[in-house]
Image 1: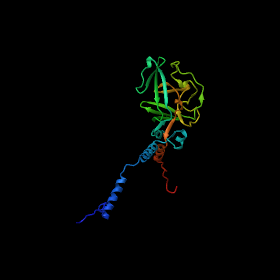
Image 2: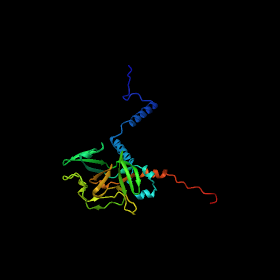
Image 3: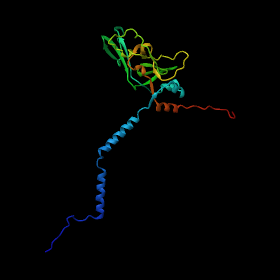
Length: 248
């Protein structure tokens, strides 16, 4: 009688088959999902890269304009941004109740108030440039004036121009000291500094040919520019060296 004995481990694989088996296991291990920590690190890196792609905004000063010899045409080809939110209000009466569709109507103390809000970092373009003053449009058919001047100093509050509502005050920004930047530099004075939103006494700002009151921190608003975009405009300008006669 013959007894057949078998190994508990089964027949041994040939060397080539074992190598293929081990290679397949390593391949499957590489295809396993990455741990959660890896995905978290990847998400953080993506957010950092996304943030870094935004514009590098710096204040646009008159000195910067002079330094790069920017003409009116150059300035009109630059993308500007607003540093702070601008909120303008004026009281409406029955004879001047028409407003722009993008503006808001508020009812305060029985008065109808038109409000215009330009949010921080809103992009705008220059539509008119003259000595020390840039007119920047943030919506079609309208613009705000910005005047080159040093940082404005607080001045005593001036009476509001006629027609504004009485308490509760719909123009709370007029209660304290105001920052006023004139529409143009003083006669004989040279412009310089940031381009601040231009305002008259009492924080009056002209917009679409109408007088508005600037409220809250609106008079801190000045123009910003993408530093990289400015460098590109400067680099694109080609300065001709001129042509000389031979021997001269």
